[in-house]
Image (tube, rainbow, N blue to C red; front, side, top):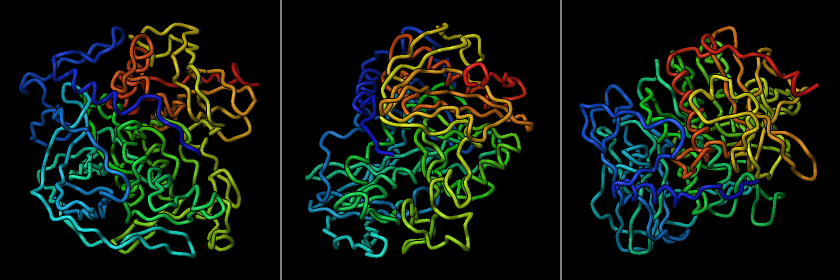
Length: 502
């Protein structure tokens, strides 16, 4: 769907880091208190998020961008979306600057939201690389730049990273993930790189538009190209608040991308939970099968955004390796139609093999754009424990810019409970945004927030007051219950859809 500007700017996160450095608090005045930090680590260091990580990482208040370089002046990409610790990754850079450096920041919670510097390169000679090429048949923009620098990740703890490029012409971020080698018993936090790439219009094309409009959009996009400026801070606005919150409360976390979920059918074996952090719209068949199989084996699942599992994609090999091309023929004839219908890349709810996302998420994508309040309906629900929630409470500006809802015409889990049920008006029609909790026979519990902006209510995203207290409490309760094992056993859903929809 068409993206709008996030409710909370990444600048808020820079302010949070600066406040923490000055000794100020970024906690809301209401809601759960910050956890007591372990006594065996000095103040300001990251809590361990993986048993093999011994790193003592300290917030670097200089992690942010002070002068963002425009597209074309300083561009770069990595030839893997993520790697295991110790696996090398190639950094491909083109710049008009005489020299540049790369700095790796692990993003999370270090007494405040922000980045800890893990590694920095020596100056590298700048080179203006060859122009991108356009594959006419699929309108695919890709580059064939040589490797400018090989990153060695042996000492990098698992986590979500930003690689910052610095030069005289400005700075740029490249998002990157160091995947956790072990996920068993952990809450797996997933960066939605397939969706980032779908919207990435570096070179003038993405899965939504081309040089003219939708009619000449790409049907295949390549990871072998930089992210455009307007996409480069997406992880900051959408994913970082939840990552920081999870680390702040000390849950046993693991890290991966959705490409990893696609590529490794055993990634989620034995995990406590898998959490899709925000807007994870683009899913391959392998991704969906893997998550469904995990849920049915007792792995909890959370969709903290909306419009999830909406577009069906395929991932194919590119010049730099496997899973470097993202295929989506929405609105155009897919070559697989008629002989491999199960993997035709229409929207998941459409023929030839309709499988609406609600079968997994419990809700259906409904409409955009909206910006309205999330409304508490039953404050006695376990997710509200310890929060200032009350019946009818409005959580300000939490529903947007896209929302999901329960739809009686679509498949849905049998044991499902509607939580917030929030009135919205979109495209001239009145409707509702629904958050849901459902449980399955394996004991797994599944939560879907029904709003892309749900986690913008976290204090780590800049929210304050009662809204921050309620949203932070809900996320804390959810993640802690998920970390303890199949959450449906302790918190079975109480079916109530009939009370809201007839």
